[in-house]
Amino acid sequence: MTASDRTLAVIGAGPAGLAAALTAADQGVRVTLLDSAAQAGGQFYRQPAVGLGARRPEVLHHAWGTWLKLRDRLAAHIAAGRITYLSDRHVWLVEQHLEPGEVRGGAGFTVHALLGPEQVEPEAVTAAAVLLATGGYEKVLPFPGWTLPGVVTAGGAQAMLKGGLVLPGRTVVVAGTGPLLMPVAVGLAAAGARIAAYVESARPASLVRQAPTFAANPAKVVEAVGYAARLIRHRGRVTVRHAVVEAHGADRVEAVTVAALDADGRLRPGSERRIACDTLAVGHGMLAHTDLAESLGCAIDATGDPFVVTDAEQRTSVDGVWAAGEATGIGGAVLALAEGEIAGYSIAARLRGVEPGEADRAAPARTRARLRKFFAAIDTACAPPAHWTEQVTDDTVVCRCEEVPAGAVREAVRDLGATDLRTVKLLTRAGMGWCQGRICAPGVAGVAGCAAGPAKRTFARPVPLAVLAQEPDGRS
Amino acid sequence: MNPLELAGARPGPAFGVTLDGRAIEALPGQTVAAALWSAGVTSWRTTRGGGSPRGVFCGIGVCFDCLVTVNGRPNQRACLVPVRSGDVILTQEGTGHDGLG
Image 1 (tube, each protein chain N blue to C red):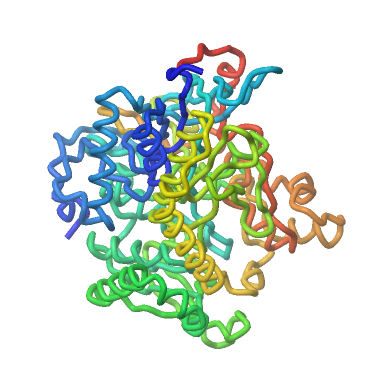
Image 2: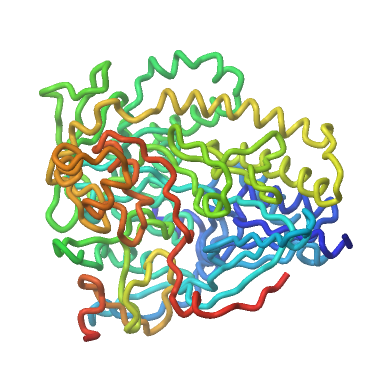
């Protein structure tokens, strides 16, 4: 194998993909870094569009200094020709084509992408190894009114603010559960929105039970306290052990009903109160993008929310394919950086045909172990209310694309004998629309009372037929 | 305070687009969705079945709720597509293909 064969395709230029690409390039691997956005950074380091001329992009971010270092290292590797950075590439398939007799480390993969925001032109990149750093997206469970304009995912509100410097409205309720909500609320408030209510369904007591894990992560605790202090300074009203049970409005959200939860996660009757707002930013945790891994045949753990299974070196179950960051389980940017770095060392060694040195990855491995434990504790404490489906009325749309009401899903289970998500989908069309079940899967599964499971999509995003009909030239 | 002030933005000159014939000012670099939010518009699609209004939901290209017709091309994700001077943006009714025969 020659040096030029040691090529790595990294899919995703967020924290995990950047850390992996930079580490591998430091070790002499030739890297092609593909990302769907116009600028590197992923969702966490999403920056205002260049045309907006932001002089203080850091005000909407946490740990901006880390980003600046990543950015400078990337620029240096690009200038030296070690990293080829391809922005605006939406990867829809990674094809493995190991021929009989072809050795591991040969040019075994073709990464198929669509160019630009309109995603109609194809491109292909070949590589000996692939790192999936495909990130995650927000999980939102259905409730009456969640399809009204002005109801947005918390992360979506943050992405539009960071990237476009816009707000959806002026009076915002931030609701749901999980650690993303706090920075979202603080960002919206700093940008001029009034936080009419901050509604977290988790119980403080369940956080206290995780105290030893939190004590082992003082930086995370300081971060959380800092956000809370800033939110209070912006006069945000924080309410715990409450949930939004309905969004009201005709053509857009005008108010929400918030209610208290009892110790079992059921509504306390009579505790409902109505809060006027023009925006509801809502989220119930995060989901991993596992499509490319699934289509490659990588093992997926689907006992809960699905994620890509990796070993100590961040290798997936498929030879030549690594994964890092949210795709391997939700854990935030610092964990993603650690996993990317570990993967980068592993890839560089394995492409040379040697075992990676333990010493290289000792520090990021310690970070990884600590933060995985931390986020497991967060997951336990910030699970959605146990009985959330009781608020989903039969006429609540659960599949937004196909407009399938919860009543149809319940009928499929109760009267037609569906016991799994696939049968529910065939009987109701829930999950057959544009988003291919990415948004509705947890909600439909919850209402149906079955597991979500991996989706087994052939392609990671819609592909024009004209693209499928032609054979693009590979580049490497 | 607004987001542009907060980030110390000095955008290039604003330009004009239209939404259903109504003039709207957009800033360079914004997506179609960001330009519409700036103009106070939060819905620009009606659903195929119920005719319900929709706009941005996930904001990152996953949910397809923000589909819109731009310059005659239906089903563009407003949260991904950059807005350009002179864009003719139409509220997308249903599949966006109703007028195509």
